[in-house]
Length: 379
Image (cartoon, rainbow, N blue to C red):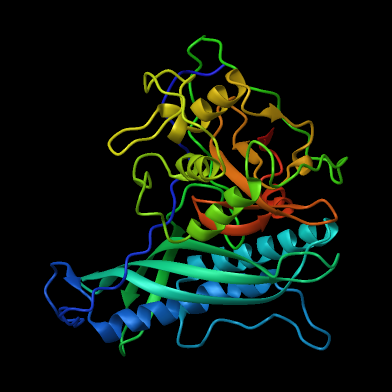
């Protein structure tokens, strides 16, 4: 039992291009007021962030024969003593995650990323830098029908201090996304605990996370819904949002809004009525029902209207099916994702907003959140 509330869940990443206009140059002797970093300084910050994040990505990549992923950060990238300890712990955690993924039959053979500075300000020799990282991890062909890669886009905030000689020392680097963490972020964010209001809602049945599961395949096209069209929609707009819809990145998260769009593209019909009544589901140019954008309300609508049924095991999810997560097991669903690819070996791959992610394996989600409660819906 959980309260009636508007709760879309996780906040998605939003990339903002670095302004190309005139920017104030930074000097270590400048006044104490905040100043925008100049182009050269912003480029330096981007290289520093890329150096640190590349170490994390490489910790996830399988070692090649005769080669070990032990590259250290560039000598030009200085970390504070505490951050050095934190990053060493991060790398160790990510290597453990790589081992857990190997046990589930997943590995990556390569990683490539780009880092863009979204905003950089300097105040009295200290800098605060917002960056966006976009990364591609290449799946190793262990079963033979894995997709080529998984991609994600995520945001970080760095704080740096100017040191003698013009060098910058990084003192912190923090993820700015509150959905399921990117695969290269070690610590799982906890969702806010919701207080039970004592009301009854059609919450559904949690799914087992045992792999492999008995397959429950479905026809992708030709029926009432076009599941292939749902997957195409999600994979088209996972990173570049559809301008025909409002974004909820700053209002609790865009994840459920995104899956609702994909379901609509595959044939789900609107149910008009009061926006606050979870039995209705609709979107128009000015408003939308709570169930269109709220993780809990979507589940209540789906089950009460028999649009979907719970699956016994999350690994039974097929293309167009929905997986939801309750991060901290408080009875409130925090995040929604759509399956857009399923391997012949029975591995679903998920595409979602918050953090914006393309074809992330269910195994990697569960490796990051082994204690979460999962729900799977056959749409």
